[in-house]
Image 1 (cartoon, rainbow, N blue to C red):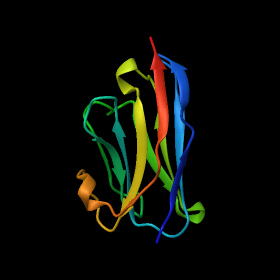
Image 2 (image 1 turned 120 degrees about the vertical axis):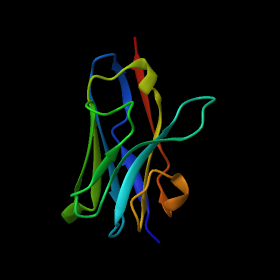
Image 3 (image 1 turned 60 degrees about the vertical axis):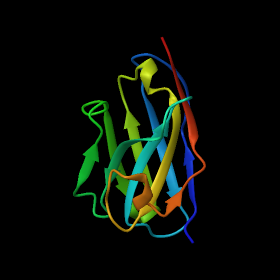
Length: 119
């Protein structure tokens, strides 16, 4: 059983930046970030393969967010730049065996970290 712990969330003004981290208790393969805003369904944000050679992004964050990983530290990152109020949500990291934009493909989930972007 792999445990995932997110950190790095907080309150930031529009146009600002945050970097989220997701530390795993063991080796993971594909990893991703999802987010869920109040009253909305959980949505895909970004995913990365184990090697880091393949990355995928939601259209809403392309060019602003960057997913990366450090396998030596079993940690995945989400660098978020040019943040907008619409990015406000609880951000969850997840890990699984195959890379996908679908939440059901991921076996392990963190508890989430709140990101709030003020206008």
